[in-house]
Image (cartoon, one colour):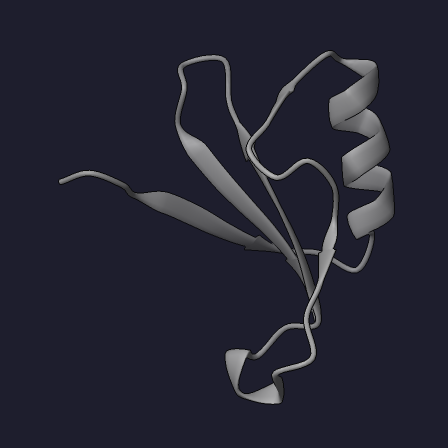
Length: 61
């Protein structure tokens, strides 16, 4: 397996982004990404890594 991530839905994506930056977390995405494809089920996302290196995808509805 080359990639696995956990998806977390939040209504506060910008706050998550700021919190990760403040904690010097590792971003996979360079910034929050807005999406226009409605079939994905979310409108924006941000991928980060936890301290163990696991990928977490935070998405906004």
